[in-house]
Amino acid sequence: MISSIKILEILELNYFFDKKPVLKNINIEVTNNDFVGLIGPNGAGKSTLLKCITGYLQNYSGKIFISAKALQDIEPKERARMIAVVVQQPQFEFDFTVRDMVLMGKFPYLEFWENYTSQQERETDKLLEKLNIEHIADRHLSELSGGEFQMVMIARALNQNTPILLFDEPASHLDIHHQIEIFQLLKKLNQEEHKTIIAVSHNINLAAEFCDKIIILNNGELVNFDSTDQALTQQAMKNIFSVPIEVVKNPFTGKPNVLYNYSPEKDEK
Image 1 (cartoon, helix red, strand yellow):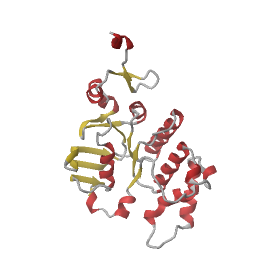
Image 2 (image 1 turned 60 degrees about the vertical axis):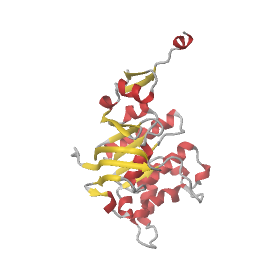
Image 3 (image 1 turned 45 degrees about the vertical axis):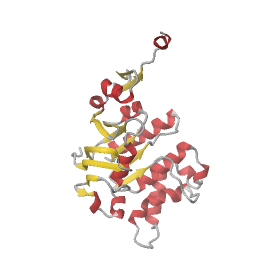
Image 4 (image 1 turned 90 degrees about the horizontal axis):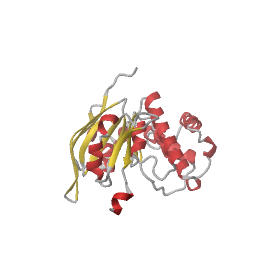
């Protein structure tokens, strides 16, 4: 049993863009055993929150601590050894091979002008095998399907060997098979390797099935942060999305599911 340790702390976080508030007084504590889903409507501030945690956005007010160390006091290379992030549809200037792209996860551990070591190359190949993508190791990124590309991005993040993993829509644009496959992998990493995971997801039910806790943002404000059962309340969902919603238990898993209660008869009347 791994003891729970506070690994991420956010205190009174505020962020403005063009003088407009994007995040408002956010307070969150995440432990090393957490698998957290981050949900909310478009424009709620989900991606902005992730960018603040990674240090990509720095002109915020408030405090962010990683393992009790203030984020602004952590050098970029050290930060890259603590947090790995997978963003939506990243663009690359060069058409790298899968192996080269995943190997780049080791970059934070290189000294200036140092080449990748044979040990790092072996670890990369083992990771490709572990994720069952070794058969595409020599293919270029432009040759990959959406699901393959997303697995490669996750593999690169895992190759950083960080305690914290952040995902911005890890299953976006994928079919249901690949969505479930991605979240099953994240759950396994959380349970077996004790990775702390925060994943933005527009698929609320997918997040509910796999995440232990849920953060709900709306208009830049923290609506709920609790266990999945406690956070995904019917009233909260109705207030946020302004449509007829029912929260029910999945009869197979017992996890909360959000259903849109649409009745054509009501419209006809």
